[in-house]
Figure 1 (spheres, rainbow, N blue to C red):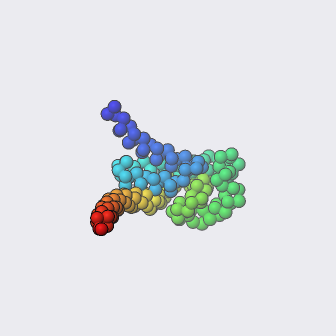
Figure 2: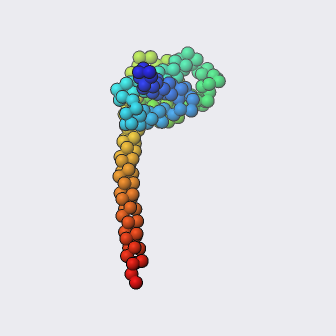
Figure 3: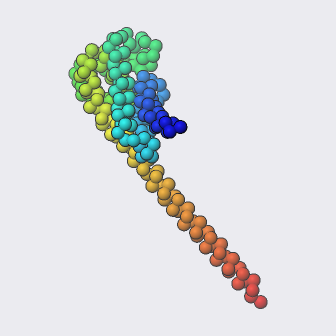
Length: 197
């Protein structure tokens, strides 16, 4: 029984990791929403900050590498792949390829923060045979900013909810006291009124 809470706690980390991978390869689990959830869980003390950040960081990079390796393995044929043709069309591949030749690293650094473009960029990085280490280092650096912003937003949001909860509890107590005083005042006033001849 003692191990059960520990299992639940670790499941949060694994869950965040898996959600990021599934979201990265096209399932309806947006990366940003998972990162915000991570920040929210940290603020609620449901997970510890350091392992949670490591889990989402690893999840982001793993998802990005999966897309990169698909691009590297299938090359331009990736647009014909049943799963990935939804992510990138032949026309989009051509456009990004042209820009990739000019900007490469800069495109990944900036494009990773654009929803809808990031997955396409990672596939094209593989199609263009960008060296794996170069891709990983560029993506890892860029992902730090993504995590800072999104996890930070979730953390601030969670703390705001805690403050609101405390304020609501305080307001509820004040309202209850006011209702009691008002009711008492009304009863006293009524009893005096009834005693008058």
